[in-house]
Length: 103
Image (cartoon, rainbow, N blue to C red; front, side, top):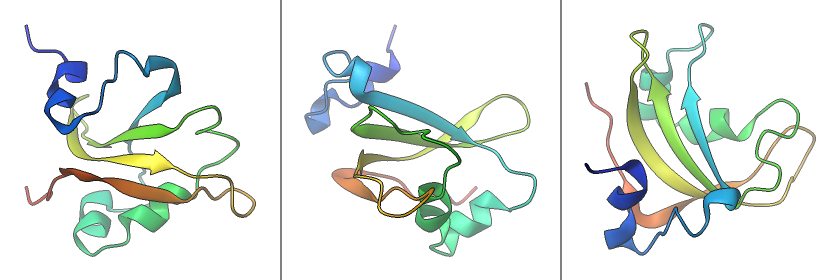
């Protein structure tokens, strides 16, 4: 069976070795149309504003857009930077691990 951690090995990302430093986020927010926000280029900004210390003690974020049927659509893998302002965290795409969400 193919597991999530195996999907990223061809890109040089070993989620098993880095398990304690990886966060998975399934974004759902009734206030925003996140798929549209992603298509229009605003999703990275939205995602960087997280309450509390959601990304504390993590270096890598594997990000998904949530769906109502408890499923998710993969959008990308990010490197997590240091807290830059109250409630914001800089995120940068890892090279080559990004998709386009169209459906």
